Amino acid sequence: MTKLVPDTSILIDQMVCPLVLEEYENAEVLIPEAVLSEIENHANRRKDLGYLGIDEIKNLRKLSEEGKITISFVGRRPQLDEISIAGGGEIDAMIRDIARKHDAILLTSDKLQNDIAQAQGIETYFYEKEGPIQLDKTELESYFLENMSSVHLRENTTPIGKRGTPGKVELVEIDYVPLRYKDLDRIAKEVIEQAKLRHDCFIEIDKKGAKVIQFGDLRVTIAKPPFSDGFEITAIKPVNKLNLDDYDVSDKLLDRLSNQAKGILVAGSPGAGKSTFAQALAEYYYYDMEQIVKTMESPRDLNLDDNITQYAPLEGDMENTADILLLVRPDYTIFDEVRKTRDFEIYSDMRLAGVGMIGVIHATRAIDAVQRFLGRLELGIIPSVIDTAIYIDKGEVDTVYSIELKVKVPSGMLEADLSRPVIEIKDFETEELFYEIYTYGEQTIVMNVNETNSKDDEKEAEKSPVSKIVDKVIRKEVNRVAPNAIMEISLISENRALLEIDEDHAGVVIGKNGKTIAQIEERAGISIEVANLDVKEIDNRTPINVNVSGNYLSLNFRKEDIGSSYDIIVEDEYLFTATVGKKANIRLKKDIEMAEIIIKAMKKDEPIYARLRNEDLF
Image 1 (cartoon, rainbow, N blue to C red):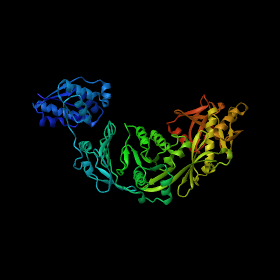
Image 2: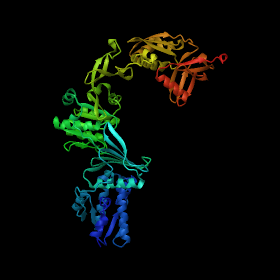
Image 3: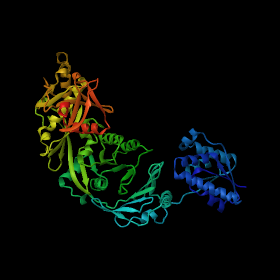
C-alpha cells in the first residue's frame, strides 16, 4: 500500500483529496501531528489558511469512511516554541523526518520543502501551482458600476457605494435587498480564494477580525466581530488617474517641485484626492524629471505605473522598508500614509539621509499637516525635513505653503533681546507670511500672524495674542511657587509685564533677594514688575485663583475666608454657593457640570469671581 505524508502547504491548497482520487486510490495517508498543530495555530489566529486546511482533513476523513483511503495521525505534537519558529523550518523538518521514517511519499506545494526533501533522498510529489489564470469576475467586483469609487457592504443593510470623483461624490444605493451574514461570508471567501490564485493580489493585513487585501486595483477591507460589531466589507477603487498637467499648477510651483522641493507634504481630508495628486507627482518625477521613484505603503494601493516599485512594511515594520530604501537610494520616495509617531520619525530619517520625500498625510488644513511634526521632532530640524506643504481639497490644489527657518523677533514682539529661531510659513505664491512657530518659555507657539480679533468680542480684542501667551506662561510659573495666589497680569511693553499679586503671596513669589522672581522671568522670557493687588470687592465680587489637579478643580481663597460662604460667579452669571473648607479652598470633581463650566471659562481667559454670601440680601 502506498503511503503518503502531506505537508501543511498542500493541505491548505486543498489538493490532497483530488490527488489521492486520481493517482493514489487506496493509499494510506499519514498526517503528521506537526501539520495538525500548524493548521490549528492558523485557525486559532482566525486565519483562513487554518480553516482551509481543516476542511481538507475533513474531506480526507470522508474518503476514509467511504473506504477509498485509510487515514491516521502520526508523530509527536510540537512544542509551543517549535510552532512559533515554524518559519525557520522546524515544522517542515519534522514532516520530512516522518516521511523518511515511514518510507512514504511527501506531498507538498512548497518548492523549498520539495527541493530539500529531494536533496535528502525523500520521494516527493510536488504540486506546482498554475501561473496566471483567467478567473470569473467576483461578486464584489460586480458591485462596481460605472464611475464607482467605493463599495460598502454590511450585514442586514443594503449595499451602498460612492460614485464620482474627488469633490463631486454622491452616495448611491446599489441594491434594494439587504445582505445577510451568509452573503458577506460568501463574497469574502470568493475574494480570498481568488487572491491566492491571482499574481496581482496579496493579503496585506491578516489579524483577528480584520483583513486587508489588495485585489487587483481594489483595496478590500474585511471586518468581523470582535473587531467590528458586524460583518462588513469595504472596497475602494481608484477612478481618477491624473497627470500633473491636469492640476492648476503654476509655473512657479512647478519650478519649485522640479528644482527645490525635497521634503513635500501632500495633505487633505479623506477622499479629497491627495493620493491621486501624489500619484501624479510620482509619475511626473519619473517620466518628466527622469528620477528614480519608489513608494512606502501600507497597504499598497497607489495606482502607479509598473516602472515605480511599491514597497510594503518589511516583516510588518516600515522601518525595515526604510533600511532597504536607503540602500536602493531612490531620488524620491512616496510615503503613504504618514500617521503614527514612528512614521514621522522614519519620514524624517529618510529625508535627512538625502532622499527626496513626499508624505501623504491626513489634515483638515494645510497648517495642521505641519503641526503634526511638532513634539515629534526638534523645532529647528523641521524646516530641514519639510519645505513645502500642498493642501488638496475637492481634487484640486487649494493651498501651498513654503516652510523656512529664520532667526528673528516673532511678530508682535519688539525688543531685540526676544530674538529666537522662528519657522516662517508663507503662502508660496504670494509670499505672504501666514504663521510663525517658535518657543516661548517651555511652550511651542503656533501664531497666526494674520488672525484678526472678533469685533463682537471687545474683551478678546483688548488682549493681543502675545498678551495671552505672556499671561498663560507667567500664571503657570507663579502657580508653581504660590498655587493659591490671586493675581492679575498685564503687558506693559513687548518685553515687560506687570504682575499684581495679593499681599499674602507677594513675598513668596519675589523670594529672598528677588531670586524666585528672577527664575520666573528666565522661564517666561520676559521682565516682570511685581506689585500688590488691591483685592477689593467690585460689585461685591472678588477674583479668585483656580487650579486643576488630577480629577479635581480647586477654587483657592485666603485663610481668613475659611468657613465663609461664597457665591461663585462665571461670566457674570451666578453658578453655585459653597463654603470655604479647612484648606482655604472649594474643591469640585472635574466631571461635574459646574466644574466643566469653570474650565470652559478659564480656556477663554474669563476670570472666576467669588462673592461673599450676605444672607441679609436674600
